[in-house]
Length: 546
Image 1 (cartoon, one colour):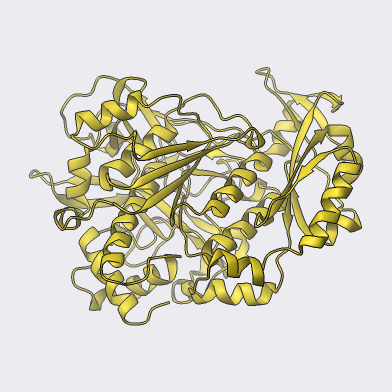
Image 2 (image 1 turned 180 degrees about the horizontal axis):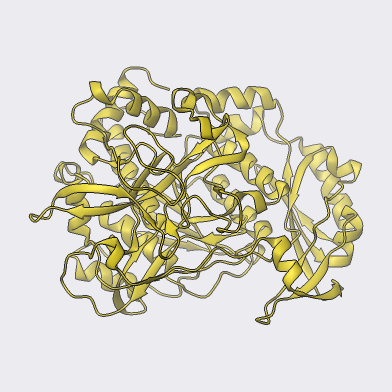
């Protein structure tokens, strides 16, 4: 999805907000759409308009092979990091072979380009030229609602000059679209969030994210700062203007019209880490364009924390898109970037109840931190009381979780492997408030509202790690980097840690899996206790972790 075949995992409804406690989940009025049909199903239900002609522009991203892949895999697994210059020297693609490939693509009638240290070649051109080059059939389709898209179900064949340097290609369809969700008004305010997850001790210690930059890949536009400024003023937070940068590029396509996802991510992060800088990368909601924006984000490396609230049905994500994205993410890990990804909002059934249980890509990648969802309940005094796994059978919503169908269980999950995981990567890793009925107060479209979804839990985790990074830097320690080895060490050693780093969620389910003590498919290790998490991270790093 930065690739994105994307499924937008956000839930919101705008209305006048009144001061009230969130209603229990079963009492909340929600309208969460079912997952979109798979590409194959969409094609079966669509009118075939015939082969795509010269008027259809296809945007391809060719994922480049790294040099010394075995050494890179060991580096990623070790938790150690290197500089961008060292990465390019040791693992960057062979520049001579890349230039040959670019020349061949241009000769084939496409407009191709590459700039080091990019992990991909971007190539745009008419559909017939792309179809001929890759030996595929690209057709145009029209859905019953009038939406048109192009797609190919064929497996592309890379010519030898491309196969010498490229391992995959994404962008052979533009079917997948983002979507939004709707719920009633209300929501946790910034003060509630800081108190509920015990982040106040960090804020009281002067940690506000200053010196940190959080990066956000997004697919819905942010035309102005009006909503953000209203939110900041309402809750006494610094203005967004000096902190926010929005990056867009014609090479990344055109983002969707504003739907509230980008606003939600920014407002939640600002609630927790109001001093952190924010950089948004806007792209179109398809794999080819999304890969390009994600690649540029890692290349720019303007910050060390990524918050991603996007995803797609893993089994329906083309292998070319998965492989291209995974290669870019390997580079991000090697450079020391923390990457939090929403696990989805349809429980264990990201692809739909008519499909087998499945996870959301890229949350299923072993090199990212997958964030699941909970329903929260405050005590009468407004402090933490308990959480349940988010799962609502009435509207078929819940925090994403389950086993990957492609990726083997990583080493850091060795002690948490469940029989239902069949030796594959298990998600989520952690969780936080995501149930729309117990969600977050936001401002969108000039109005107060409430939002939920794992796309709300994800920026909460990203902002928390920004605070921890700030503390680590002040203590002369390395930043968090790839978070999972430390998170699993904390989970496995929780009995020895005081305060506890997690709220262990042991009740509820995500429509497919029950929450239980310790790690589970519904909530991972659970949600954060901010002060406990910070203390545990300091102990982990001082003890030689990673």
